Image (cartoon, rainbow, N blue to C red; front, side):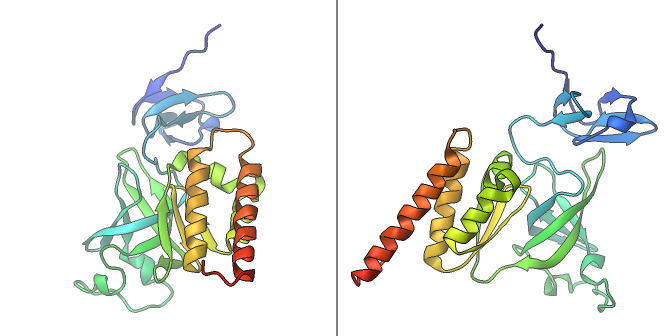
Amino acid sequence: MKRMYKVVIPGDFISEDVNRAGEGTYIEEGKVYAMRYGVVDEKDEIKVVPFVGKYQPAKGDVVIGRITEISFPYWIVDIASPYEARLHMSEVTSGGKKRVEFGSMHTYLDIDDLIVAKVTNTDAMMRIDLGLMEDFQLGGDGRLITIPYTKVPRIIGRKGSMIRMLKEKCNCFIFVAKNGRIWIRGKEEDMNLASEVILMIANEAHTSGLTDRVADFLDSYRSKMVRMDNKGLKR
């Protein structure tokens, strides 16, 4: 029998089985509702699988965001989603730090600054609240690249196998956020290599044998660099 899929939009009623409510849903007055556009999957838990497109935030996700606006008492943050997120000024003044005064928020976080944050809350109106992570601010000599958020699991790999290999063989710090943004820090040539390989993985995520091809590519590149060094050639 052909399986039927139910298409929902934010706010659509799905079920009264609140114990099975999962990703992409919210509970209100003992009922489960859709939090995003997508199709309902009730195989194990009740969840809404998004259509291919931009990242749909969920509580608990760790994301890389860019400050786009300062609107006291919030920083407005682009998280590569159709919906803007907000970061309350208390997030940078907790722990006994001095209170942020009106007009001075830019001295803490300014337009275009990059941050690492956790989605602390979403609601039916897609108001998204963020909380800052430790060592939350990104900058300096690093590099930000963006891939489709649906490809993030392939970059991580089974039990973290792919990302461990990338860090070791590219000799870089690599942080992969749930919204498809990836922060890379290292020597310029190492960051170039990491960026190339990450984009390769994203483009070929649907193919089999990818892990072995990536390992072969990285080993071949490193061997080539060693040969060039031994010959005294510039990279």
